[in-house]
Image: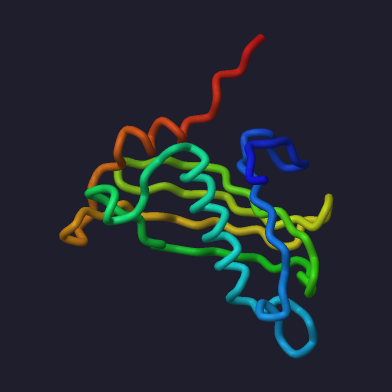
Length: 144
């Protein structure tokens, strides 16, 4: 059910649905703050998979690491919620990407964040983004 679809914040965003289970929550049934990052990681992985891009060490000569995260928690996510996690490239540099990742329940924005990913080679040194990553990081050409 992951897909590129339209949503209130942007129509170039990849969306991935996540169901919240009890293991994701604290004793009050609210998603534990660090688990928002896990939801975002799942969405990024599915975005790459849906784009046909290899992204694991055993498949490529590069990998991604999270370099910086900035999250703003707006409303709680609750047990059994079905949320949608977005992935949109907002900046593509020579060896890194900055992604906007938002989490919605229906039309309600729950969490907004920016995640910077650095591209590393097998020696754990920064390397240029592969062409297949650059290709999926560009906004689609708008048809008039």
